[in-house]
Length: 108
Image (tube, rainbow, N blue to C red; front, top):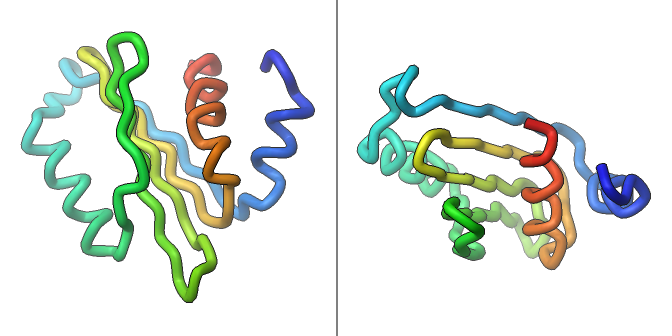
């Protein structure tokens, strides 16, 4: 991590984190699988928070709030060759989601 202190500050209110990376070719992950994944998050009351492109990846972030309190965040990083899912229980400052996604990508 380039800035461990910044990373620690970002993750301090996270209760649980899952990181899943799927090799699209090896695991036969299709556009339909992606749509189903998004649909599953939305049916669990996640709402789209942001969508952005970074290099060759498309990043979508979804948030689950209950009574104005962030309960979960899902970040989907979709590239040509892989799909990375970051599923967080707890809270991350909304302006730091992109930074968190970038730092986690450097771990792969």
